[in-house]
Image 1 (tube, rainbow, N blue to C red):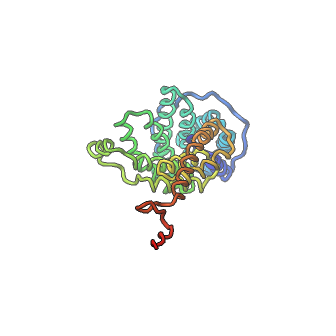
Image 2 (tube, rainbow, N blue to C red):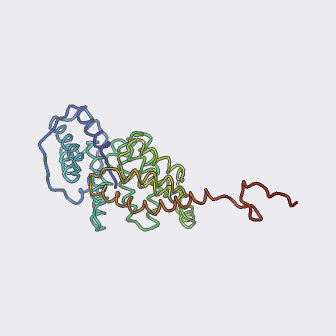
Image 3 (tube, rainbow, N blue to C red):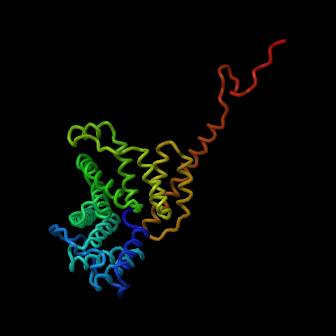
Length: 316
Protein backbone atom coordinates (compact mmCIF):
# COMPACT_ATOMS: atom_id res chain seq x y z
CA UNK A 1 0.00 0.00 0.00
CA UNK A 2 2.85 2.31 0.77
CA UNK A 3 5.90 3.41 -1.08
CA UNK A 4 6.76 4.36 -4.59
CA UNK A 5 4.67 3.64 -7.63
CA UNK A 6 5.43 3.82 -11.35
CA UNK A 7 5.64 7.62 -11.24
CA UNK A 8 8.17 7.57 -8.41
CA UNK A 9 10.22 4.78 -9.97
CA UNK A 10 10.09 6.58 -13.31
CA UNK A 11 11.44 9.73 -11.70
CA UNK A 12 14.33 7.73 -10.23
CA UNK A 13 15.12 6.15 -13.58
CA UNK A 14 15.00 9.57 -15.23
CA UNK A 15 17.38 10.98 -12.65
CA UNK A 16 19.84 8.17 -13.29
CA UNK A 17 19.60 8.58 -17.06
CA UNK A 18 20.15 12.31 -16.72
CA UNK A 19 23.36 11.51 -14.87
CA UNK A 20 24.52 9.30 -17.73
CA UNK A 21 23.57 5.90 -16.35
CA UNK A 22 22.72 2.84 -18.39
CA UNK A 23 21.29 -0.62 -17.81
CA UNK A 24 23.33 -3.14 -15.86
CA UNK A 25 23.15 -6.88 -15.48
CA UNK A 26 20.27 -8.04 -13.28
CA UNK A 27 21.17 -8.81 -9.68
CA UNK A 28 19.15 -10.57 -7.02
CA UNK A 29 21.26 -10.78 -3.84
CA UNK A 30 19.80 -11.80 -0.53
CA UNK A 31 18.24 -8.98 1.49
CA UNK A 32 18.75 -8.79 5.25
CA UNK A 33 15.64 -8.10 7.34
CA UNK A 34 17.02 -4.74 8.39
CA UNK A 35 20.08 -2.63 7.79
CA UNK A 36 22.46 -2.24 10.73
CA UNK A 37 22.63 1.15 12.47
CA UNK A 38 25.04 3.50 10.75
CA UNK A 39 26.25 6.83 12.07
CA UNK A 40 24.87 9.89 10.33
CA UNK A 41 27.14 10.92 7.50
CA UNK A 42 28.20 14.52 7.33
CA UNK A 43 26.51 16.49 4.57
CA UNK A 44 28.73 16.55 1.51
CA UNK A 45 28.37 16.81 -2.25
CA UNK A 46 29.09 13.10 -2.57
CA UNK A 47 26.31 11.14 -4.20
CA UNK A 48 24.77 14.06 -6.03
CA UNK A 49 23.50 13.54 -9.53
CA UNK A 50 26.18 13.85 -12.16
CA UNK A 51 29.00 12.89 -9.78
CA UNK A 52 28.45 9.15 -9.58
CA UNK A 53 30.99 6.77 -11.01
CA UNK A 54 29.81 4.81 -14.06
CA UNK A 55 29.49 1.61 -12.03
CA UNK A 56 27.27 3.36 -9.48
CA UNK A 57 25.10 4.87 -12.22
CA UNK A 58 24.61 1.38 -13.62
CA UNK A 59 23.57 0.13 -10.18
CA UNK A 60 21.07 2.96 -9.78
CA UNK A 61 19.58 2.27 -13.19
CA UNK A 62 19.32 -1.42 -12.34
CA UNK A 63 17.59 -0.64 -9.03
CA UNK A 64 15.06 1.60 -10.79
CA UNK A 65 14.45 -1.14 -13.37
CA UNK A 66 13.81 -3.68 -10.61
CA UNK A 67 11.37 -1.32 -8.88
CA UNK A 68 9.48 -0.89 -12.14
CA UNK A 69 9.26 -4.69 -12.32
CA UNK A 70 7.99 -4.75 -8.70
CA UNK A 71 11.05 -6.62 -7.46
CA UNK A 72 11.42 -4.57 -4.33
CA UNK A 73 13.71 -6.87 -2.35
CA UNK A 74 16.18 -7.12 -5.22
CA UNK A 75 16.06 -3.35 -5.73
CA UNK A 76 16.70 -2.75 -2.03
CA UNK A 77 19.74 -5.01 -2.19
CA UNK A 78 21.17 -2.97 -5.07
CA UNK A 79 20.67 0.29 -3.17
CA UNK A 80 22.36 -1.31 -0.16
CA UNK A 81 25.34 -2.18 -2.38
CA UNK A 82 25.52 1.45 -3.51
CA UNK A 83 25.55 2.56 0.13
CA UNK A 84 28.45 0.21 0.89
CA UNK A 85 30.44 2.16 -1.67
CA UNK A 86 29.06 5.58 -0.74
CA UNK A 87 27.20 5.75 2.61
CA UNK A 88 26.17 9.34 1.85
CA UNK A 89 24.36 8.67 -1.42
CA UNK A 90 21.12 10.64 -1.10
CA UNK A 91 19.04 8.87 -3.75
CA UNK A 92 20.04 5.41 -2.52
CA UNK A 93 19.24 6.37 1.08
CA UNK A 94 15.72 7.66 0.57
CA UNK A 95 14.88 4.92 -1.91
CA UNK A 96 16.14 2.29 0.56
CA UNK A 97 13.87 3.82 3.20
CA UNK A 98 10.81 3.67 0.93
CA UNK A 99 11.50 0.10 -0.15
CA UNK A 100 12.09 -1.04 3.44
CA UNK A 101 8.63 0.22 4.38
CA UNK A 102 7.02 -1.47 1.37
CA UNK A 103 8.64 -4.80 2.16
CA UNK A 104 7.99 -4.60 5.90
CA UNK A 105 4.31 -3.81 5.38
CA UNK A 106 3.82 -7.18 3.70
CA UNK A 107 4.66 -9.14 6.84
CA UNK A 108 2.01 -10.05 9.38
CA UNK A 109 4.73 -10.79 11.94
CA UNK A 110 5.21 -7.66 14.04
CA UNK A 111 8.87 -8.44 14.72
CA UNK A 112 9.73 -8.38 11.01
CA UNK A 113 7.60 -5.32 10.43
CA UNK A 114 9.44 -3.51 13.20
CA UNK A 115 12.84 -4.53 11.83
CA UNK A 116 12.10 -3.19 8.36
CA UNK A 117 10.39 -0.02 9.61
CA UNK A 118 13.30 0.73 11.95
CA UNK A 119 15.73 0.21 9.08
CA UNK A 120 13.64 2.60 6.96
CA UNK A 121 13.82 5.21 9.72
CA UNK A 122 17.61 4.93 9.84
CA UNK A 123 17.94 5.31 6.09
CA UNK A 124 15.59 8.31 6.13
CA UNK A 125 17.46 9.87 9.06
CA UNK A 126 20.69 9.72 7.08
CA UNK A 127 19.00 11.21 4.01
CA UNK A 128 17.66 14.04 6.17
CA UNK A 129 21.16 14.70 7.49
CA UNK A 130 22.23 15.28 3.88
CA UNK A 131 19.20 17.35 2.83
CA UNK A 132 17.07 18.50 5.79
CA UNK A 133 14.58 20.20 3.48
CA UNK A 134 14.66 17.69 0.65
CA UNK A 135 11.22 16.64 -0.51
CA UNK A 136 12.30 13.02 -0.93
CA UNK A 137 14.09 12.76 2.42
CA UNK A 138 11.12 14.24 4.25
CA UNK A 139 8.73 11.92 2.45
CA UNK A 140 10.89 8.92 3.39
CA UNK A 141 11.05 10.08 7.02
CA UNK A 142 7.29 10.62 7.15
CA UNK A 143 6.60 7.23 5.58
CA UNK A 144 8.87 5.42 8.03
CA UNK A 145 7.45 7.21 11.08
CA UNK A 146 3.84 6.77 9.95
CA UNK A 147 4.47 3.04 9.54
CA UNK A 148 6.15 2.77 12.93
CA UNK A 149 3.27 4.66 14.55
CA UNK A 150 0.88 1.87 13.57
CA UNK A 151 2.80 -0.46 15.89
CA UNK A 152 2.88 1.93 18.86
CA UNK A 153 0.55 2.23 21.82
CA UNK A 154 -1.75 5.24 22.04
CA UNK A 155 0.54 7.76 23.73
CA UNK A 156 3.59 6.96 21.62
CA UNK A 157 1.45 6.89 18.48
CA UNK A 158 0.15 10.38 19.15
CA UNK A 159 3.67 11.64 19.81
CA UNK A 160 4.66 10.18 16.45
CA UNK A 161 1.77 11.97 14.75
CA UNK A 162 2.94 15.22 16.34
CA UNK A 163 6.45 14.64 14.98
CA UNK A 164 5.09 13.68 11.55
CA UNK A 165 3.68 17.11 10.85
CA UNK A 166 6.86 18.82 9.68
CA UNK A 167 7.83 15.88 7.48
CA UNK A 168 4.53 15.58 5.61
CA UNK A 169 4.30 19.31 4.96
CA UNK A 170 7.94 19.70 3.89
CA UNK A 171 7.62 16.70 1.57
CA UNK A 172 4.74 18.29 -0.31
CA UNK A 173 6.27 21.77 -0.21
CA UNK A 174 9.51 20.63 -1.86
CA UNK A 175 8.12 17.83 -4.06
CA UNK A 176 4.60 18.95 -5.01
CA UNK A 177 4.77 16.58 -7.99
CA UNK A 178 5.07 13.50 -5.75
CA UNK A 179 1.59 11.93 -5.40
CA UNK A 180 2.68 9.57 -2.62
CA UNK A 181 3.58 12.57 -0.48
CA UNK A 182 0.09 14.03 -0.98
CA UNK A 183 -1.51 10.71 -0.03
CA UNK A 184 0.53 10.50 3.15
CA UNK A 185 -0.26 14.08 4.09
CA UNK A 186 -3.95 13.42 3.49
CA UNK A 187 -3.91 10.40 5.78
CA UNK A 188 -2.16 12.40 8.47
CA UNK A 189 -4.61 15.31 8.11
CA UNK A 190 -7.63 13.05 8.32
CA UNK A 191 -6.37 11.17 11.37
CA UNK A 192 -5.42 14.32 13.28
CA UNK A 193 -8.66 15.99 12.23
CA UNK A 194 -10.55 13.10 13.86
CA UNK A 195 -8.86 13.10 17.26
CA UNK A 196 -11.45 12.23 19.87
CA UNK A 197 -11.88 14.10 23.16
CA UNK A 198 -9.40 11.96 25.08
CA UNK A 199 -6.80 12.28 22.35
CA UNK A 200 -7.21 16.05 22.31
CA UNK A 201 -6.89 16.24 26.08
CA UNK A 202 -3.78 14.04 26.04
CA UNK A 203 -2.25 16.15 23.28
CA UNK A 204 -2.93 19.36 25.19
CA UNK A 205 -1.45 18.09 28.46
CA UNK A 206 1.53 16.06 27.24
CA UNK A 207 2.30 17.05 23.66
CA UNK A 208 1.83 20.79 23.50
CA UNK A 209 -1.56 20.64 21.82
CA UNK A 210 -3.13 19.02 18.77
CA UNK A 211 -0.84 19.42 15.73
CA UNK A 212 -2.19 22.18 13.46
CA UNK A 213 -3.12 21.50 9.87
CA UNK A 214 -5.30 18.44 10.27
CA UNK A 215 -8.88 18.60 9.03
CA UNK A 216 -11.32 16.73 6.83
CA UNK A 217 -11.35 19.35 4.09
CA UNK A 218 -7.58 19.51 3.87
CA UNK A 219 -7.34 15.70 3.83
CA UNK A 220 -9.83 15.48 0.97
CA UNK A 221 -7.88 18.10 -0.96
CA UNK A 222 -4.62 16.20 -0.46
CA UNK A 223 -6.06 12.88 -1.69
CA UNK A 224 -7.78 14.58 -4.62
CA UNK A 225 -4.42 16.11 -5.56
CA UNK A 226 -2.73 12.71 -5.35
CA UNK A 227 -5.25 11.29 -7.82
CA UNK A 228 -4.82 14.25 -10.19
CA UNK A 229 -1.09 13.61 -10.20
CA UNK A 230 -1.39 9.85 -10.69
CA UNK A 231 -4.77 8.37 -11.59
CA UNK A 232 -3.46 4.80 -11.76
CA UNK A 233 -2.97 4.13 -8.04
CA UNK A 234 -5.82 2.13 -6.53
CA UNK A 235 -4.80 2.99 -2.96
CA UNK A 236 -5.46 6.68 -3.64
CA UNK A 237 -9.02 5.93 -4.74
CA UNK A 238 -9.64 3.61 -1.79
CA UNK A 239 -8.44 6.14 0.78
CA UNK A 240 -10.46 8.99 -0.71
CA UNK A 241 -13.59 6.86 -1.19
CA UNK A 242 -13.59 5.88 2.48
CA UNK A 243 -13.20 9.53 3.48
CA UNK A 244 -16.13 10.49 1.28
CA UNK A 245 -18.20 7.68 2.75
CA UNK A 246 -17.51 8.67 6.34
CA UNK A 247 -18.34 12.29 5.51
CA UNK A 248 -21.77 11.38 4.17
CA UNK A 249 -20.93 11.73 0.47
CA UNK A 250 -21.77 8.25 -0.83
CA UNK A 251 -22.30 9.35 -4.44
CA UNK A 252 -18.73 10.66 -4.60
CA UNK A 253 -17.45 7.46 -2.98
CA UNK A 254 -19.31 5.30 -5.49
CA UNK A 255 -17.83 7.17 -8.45
CA UNK A 256 -14.31 6.63 -7.11
CA UNK A 257 -14.81 2.96 -6.25
CA UNK A 258 -16.24 2.20 -9.70
CA UNK A 259 -13.09 3.66 -11.24
CA UNK A 260 -10.88 1.83 -8.74
CA UNK A 261 -12.21 -1.65 -9.49
CA UNK A 262 -11.42 -1.15 -13.19
CA UNK A 263 -7.79 -0.23 -12.61
CA UNK A 264 -5.18 -2.84 -13.61
CA UNK A 265 -3.41 -4.62 -10.76
CA UNK A 266 0.32 -5.31 -10.95
CA UNK A 267 1.24 -6.32 -7.41
CA UNK A 268 -0.23 -8.28 -4.54
CA UNK A 269 -0.89 -5.00 -2.74
CA UNK A 270 -2.80 -3.66 -5.74
CA UNK A 271 -4.89 -6.82 -5.92
CA UNK A 272 -5.64 -6.72 -2.19
CA UNK A 273 -6.80 -3.09 -2.29
CA UNK A 274 -8.78 -3.73 -5.48
CA UNK A 275 -10.68 -6.48 -3.66
CA UNK A 276 -11.34 -4.16 -0.73
CA UNK A 277 -12.84 -1.69 -3.20
CA UNK A 278 -15.04 -4.45 -4.67
CA UNK A 279 -16.24 -5.42 -1.20
CA UNK A 280 -16.99 -1.83 -0.21
CA UNK A 281 -18.75 -0.80 -3.40
CA UNK A 282 -22.15 -2.60 -2.94
CA UNK A 283 -22.67 -1.16 0.53
CA UNK A 284 -21.85 2.35 -0.61
CA UNK A 285 -24.08 1.97 -3.67
CA UNK A 286 -26.98 1.00 -1.39
CA UNK A 287 -26.35 4.05 0.77
CA UNK A 288 -26.16 6.31 -2.28
CA UNK A 289 -29.41 4.86 -3.69
CA UNK A 290 -31.17 5.33 -0.36
CA UNK A 291 -29.95 8.92 -0.19
CA UNK A 292 -31.17 9.57 -3.73
CA UNK A 293 -34.64 8.20 -2.90
CA UNK A 294 -34.86 10.40 0.16
CA UNK A 295 -33.90 13.48 -1.83
CA UNK A 296 -36.43 12.66 -4.56
CA UNK A 297 -39.26 12.08 -2.11
CA UNK A 298 -41.61 15.12 -1.97
CA UNK A 299 -41.62 16.94 1.34
CA UNK A 300 -44.90 16.82 3.27
CA UNK A 301 -46.52 19.99 4.52
CA UNK A 302 -48.22 20.12 7.89
CA UNK A 303 -51.64 18.63 7.37
CA UNK A 304 -50.48 16.01 4.90
CA UNK A 305 -50.20 17.99 1.65
CA UNK A 306 -47.07 17.40 -0.39
CA UNK A 307 -44.76 20.39 -0.85
CA UNK A 308 -45.37 22.01 -4.23
CA UNK A 309 -48.92 20.59 -4.53
CA UNK A 310 -51.70 23.10 -5.45
CA UNK A 311 -53.82 24.26 -2.50
CA UNK A 312 -57.14 22.50 -2.10
CA UNK A 313 -60.14 24.09 -3.82
CA UNK A 314 -62.43 26.10 -1.52
CA UNK A 315 -65.59 24.40 -0.40
CA UNK A 316 -68.68 25.37 -2.43
